[in-house]
Amino acid sequence: MKILMATDCNYIAPVVGIAKLHAKTQSEPVYLYRISLDAGLNFLKRSNSGFDHIPGACHADDLGCLFQIPLESLNMHGGEKELKAIRRFVKLWTNFLEKEACRVLIN
Image (tube, rainbow, N blue to C red; front, side):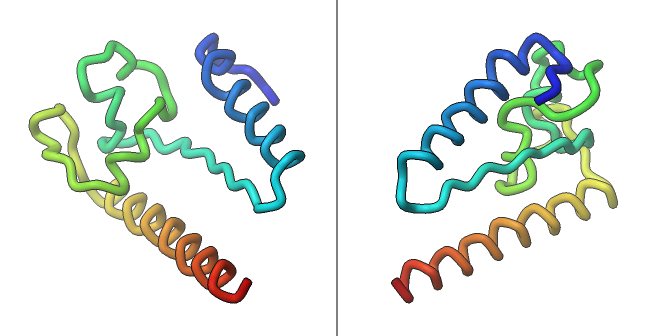
């Protein structure tokens, strides 16, 4: 794992470590995803957190792709890049839920 920012030590390293631990100790699959979208939907970066000058995604930035958030109130904006990201992210989650639900029903 390549550490790019000090916050990687606070978030990424522990999350990956816990996911690996769960995978070793649980009989059910463990899923982990990474979002690196840098767009107008970045929730935390656009909420006056002081992170808007740092490239990449922050904790909770996936919320802008999954839930309808009043963009204007958070200084967020949407365009073609954001619409494409929303479609891809919703498709990813929908496919995961459909396949996981089928796996659970079959077993």
